[in-house]
Length: 424
Image (cartoon, rainbow, N blue to C red):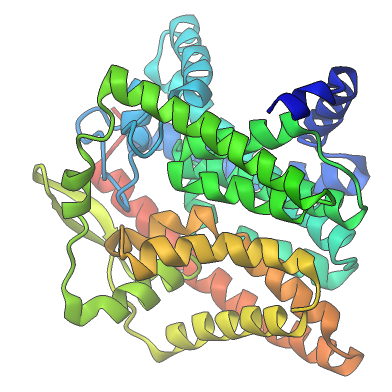
């Protein structure tokens, strides 16, 4: 610790911090255009969901109104549970307070609801920009394939839902995609990353969702630094984060409810593969049938998803998985590809191996859905010209199928939202 402080150039760190924060915003004509287009598209959806229904700010059902998201609870209290999201309130309270001011200014509770969903739209639209940069600057893709991949990403079911869902997953998607791009750019260009930025990104990711703290450390292992220095950085950041958790445990007893939460995810062992394929993997990309289901807290009905029923659904999600595996194998010598792979392995360990939350798999897509365009982008880059053309055609067909399915199911979702949670 002392050695790191001794060599700390705080002026340079401040300069790098300013440069990093500027990267949060679109740069250049193409990025600004993309951002505006997607913000308008998803902003229109978010505005409709906030004003025409009560599903985003449901006062009665504060959790699990749809797909087990806790957005209504967060919009009222700033967080859902400290054991999983220890610093979530630091990110949500400023937004919520502005929303409250809007309520008072316009004398309607819908002003706050509208503001919150538009913040979500901003976060996911920014995420598209970071993936766009990754494809262009890290993989060096251009033209049709770049726009196809980001459009594919933007049409996945998790992405659509997060565009109006004020949740930890929306914040995580924003920070994870930014971290992936930022660190990959620094590593590719052999640029040192200030220790202060390592701390900010890792603690922010872990503070929003505790399991994502590991993802905040993974890129540090690949930065161009001496191994001893890397170990010191990881150790110190881990010590800081653990200290924060210890303080919260002493003050709030945050881990007392962990076993109760684990008990919520007990599943039928005979259906474990259906949960993995249909919910954890498939539903985050391609909506299954959207249905009404019973609410565990009472007789109220909520919106949920069923298992897949068609062979074509399994074909689509299987092809996407195969493309990702292909991109990983063909680029195994490139250290940059191991960052997104390890990101995804964290989620596989938690949700597939440990089976935590596997029966609510669709909501966890916000932690990994961006890996799809990245790994497929690497696959495309490693193919010959004729193979690239074939992949473009196949991806275009998959994209059409994705659009038809997800737009159809979102139409069902909207109708159910209006039926079950009409605007008051």
